[in-house]
Length: 368
View 1 (cartoon, rainbow, N blue to C red):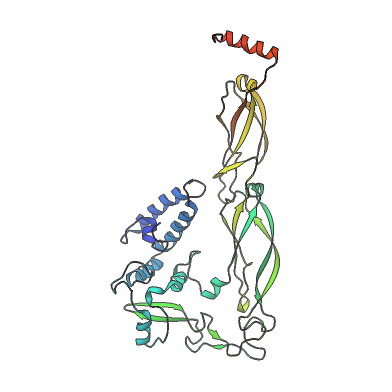
View 2 (cartoon, helix red, strand yellow; view 1 turned 45 degrees about the horizontal axis):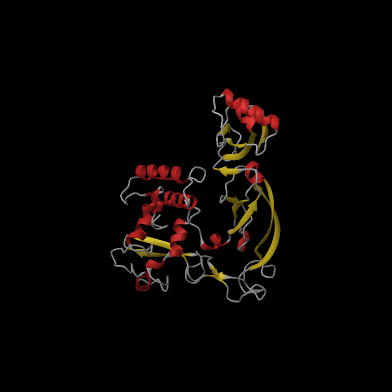
């Protein structure tokens, strides 16, 4: 992908693409890079980028806002009509009574971009976004295959008990922000558009603390640890993300963010995974490979008995339908494959050698 925030490039469509063209391009790329289908390096990241692009460009309002930012150089990429530096948003704001509404010019509005087109969808106030927590969890292959529970010991932000999470010293309270009038946002006009963003003075809270709490330094938060049981859905892939609602950081006014867990699946000695399909090795003796046999093989869902046809050669795969992983979110189930290996005897008894020689003569093999 050329630029993670160039959504048109991410989907491979023109800026003038219709909604139908955008949908077709998304479906094609989503199928190509889906982690359960693609073996291409970096497919998971490309899949996320395609999803993020579609979430914005498929929404008419978000697309209009995004196009406006592109037009005026607000994405820090290709130059807009105001040249490589982009439109000087700070100067425009000062000239129109906005004060120091932004630092760094319109070309540096990364925080505004995240508010409008945050990768988890929807515009969010900075305070709300900062309440979310992220961490990585490692689970056994069997748990990822069949689902289960994991216990986490989380270190997270909790409301300060001294100031009840307000950040203000005991006996005082936060005051309405003088710049935004308590709204938490400011709007700056730009031609026929108005750009609304978090107030820079109060960081979107709508209030300011005049006398900070000595216990938390005005943050309104302290660190605490909490044990949490997390449910691991069956079929989750390595690199998959699980959202645990309400287990993020706590903020003012009782708001609590979410916890986003990135799953790392431990390798397993018996199985390897490809999407929802599982693979394991099946060892046969030479006699079993030649004559056929019945063999019990293990799958992630238990043992099954396979009928091995005669003449099985090394490297062949036998498919056991529906015995791979099951994705409980989609209901899809993969298959289990056994990859055949044949053990050839290194030493033969006299009797075994005589039998093999008789077999060779029967097959018309010339004698040495």
